[in-house]
Image 1: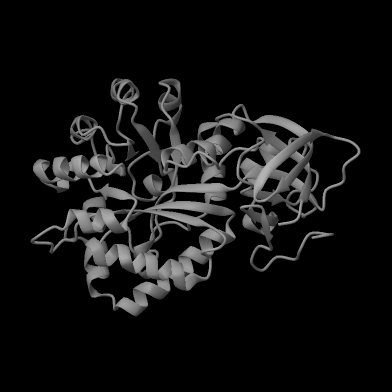
Image 2: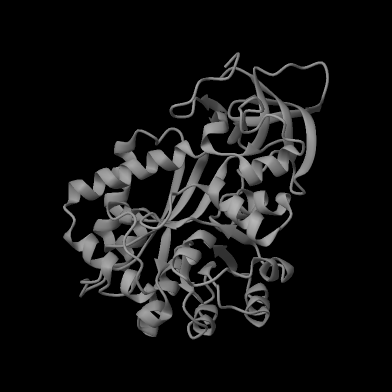
Length: 374
């Protein structure tokens, strides 16, 4: 692969330091980073690590925007979502997931972690959709499977052999023995075990922590006491603010999670409720909670990479893989932004993406004109 140079403003290293200069990419890796002056990049703009969506359910792409209903009726055992998935023909499900995968890429996201329902068949269906999407050379996914609702004889080894780990519902929805067996099986194979907790109430939080998962999703009802226990056990948190708002579950206490030292990542959750667009998630978090923009961008990149067990993406520094997004500075939306990083977090959209780089290879975003010189 030939050398490629980017130039503009970017965030450097784990502190997400605001810099201006150039980035040299070779063989898919960031080889050199220099200060402003003397080097003109072939692609210019505001440069950020590629976005990472730490929690999705893309199987429910077949049932977007359902009526408002109680959470347990919407996504609980035997609820609306489970019935829709059971009734949907395989090809319809496959095509809906394929569309969502393309949509995820178009939003500047190059890695997503999906909690996949439906047992081994569900895992294989998502893999087939990923293959059929044609995005395989442009992004990655992590699949966290689970036993299907009708699995009388659960083949945990088969699910773990096909998936990157196990992603379960609340401890209130499953037997303790099953959850313990799945957690132990995932750990024994060096794979991820994760689950939802603290979304509806506090009843399932202590049990979830006791299982010592890699991360817990939601935690809208959790307290500093829970976060301290999670920190002590090295358990990460994934928040899905827009999803919690639309289901009426409240706003996750993100500031308290961060203050407790947790690694906090961001996901968009069910596609039936929200577009899988991390730009929207960043804007909501920023404007509702008024967190520092560096912290928010870090949650949507480096923190999410760590949650999903990826250590070579999510940062702009020498030696990291060149998975990057270049935001144009000359669009009507981004022109005249005075603080570029704040502008990216609070107002940038997929329409402002000028280029998406995966493993150092640049792609034009969908339905967007290319950058000058691109």
